[in-house]
Length: 243
Length: 316
Image 1 (cartoon, rainbow over the protein chains, first blue to last red):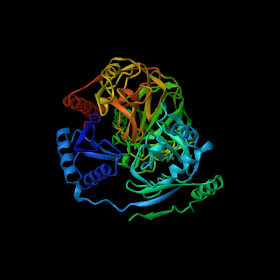
Image 2 (cartoon, helix red, strand yellow; image 1 turned 30 degrees about the vertical axis):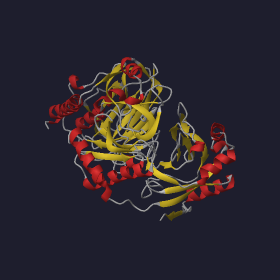
Image 3 (tube, one colour; image 1 turned 180 degrees about the vertical axis):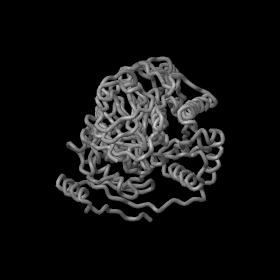
Image 4 (cartoon, rainbow over the protein chains, first blue to last red; image 1 turned 90 degrees about the vertical axis):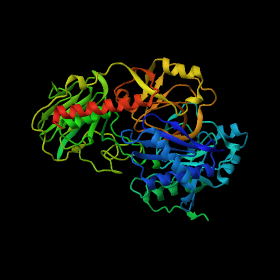
């Protein structure tokens, strides 16, 4: 549900959240991205940076330059005016993924939790295109929307210390891909050989908020050959523009 | 110029500055020195810009060989630093010469020492910063922690002509128990009243899982009123995350930029240096600061301390 008025949440003495709704929803997310765009255009003095997420924008500020009441007032005003800014045209990007085995140690758990067979989980996960709602958590990590609620599975109660780069996981009703090795609490179902983050690339992330992506199941042989091509820099990412 | 050779890096020594800001929207954490107070003072001592790249030395074991005469300053944790075996005074400018050996071999107080050097460490800027982010493999020295045999270059500069030292009242004391001032929110409404009381009244212990990304605490479990998961949102510096197991994790400079666990509170930013100097086994208590004027007063106090040191040392 979209809130009638955006909510402000306190994030300590140097950050404030502007929350637009209480759900993972494309329209709520568009409001977040529009506010981000207008903040970038307006260059509000005292605003250091901002992080757009599913349903809220986290705004970092410098308290020596702007007080919270003035900041809230400014953000409130910008949020009301955001309708006038268009958003860029989205792309659909293919993500080759190997499911299960050592690449997806939690695939069986997800199947049991969903009362589905392993092939059904894979079919469900590869079925629909996902909207990239936001980039975050780690460099280049896409938070995706559009996963079937049939395979929703809660996070681990205590995160793993190490998750390999390229791991594809599920957390609650969300699915995503780990761009670099890191700790993390998502249930791992597979892995992609694509490089999601490369500081030498411009922009460094493979995806942008507002893009769509689809997972395509691959064999171990295809995984190895794609991984080699990615490492040699010869792999061409498959993408099309969405009307 | 080539100024230091890393003989032994110790458990974690990295090149840091005051952070890489503006890239969290791409998922890139700010990184930078965790104890920004000790970091800035180090640079003031050697006459650098406050954000000049320095070394962050975590716990004991780091040893460096000096390849070129220069001036350094050591601030932060007291790791019993020595020059060719004789103690190096901390919180003051200190000249070193070619072939000297600097070693940090015994933990006295704190957790992270800073070595500032005249001109600053010379590393390429990645996304406009010299800060190392190991998880992303970017910044600092080849995007990684220092290793034996690494040669560190510094920017040539005129070292400060006279030796100066920071008066004792501006040198923090690092004990084994800290109290952190916190601001409740953004998700304090996901906890029971009992859960909030547990958080504010209990003593927690810093676990062995404490690094630049975050600091996991052990102690009484904090009770959620319903679930511990939220729709992922941004994570400010100092956010106190409470996952399903009820044990708090305080997120630091190398943190994930967004995440899906409830955040009961945020540590006031000027309190982060205290946490930077706490080590596994140390105790942590939390105290609520409810009033915006009180938070601002803490920032003003921090600024005044830095300014006072600048005036005393550099007449600025």
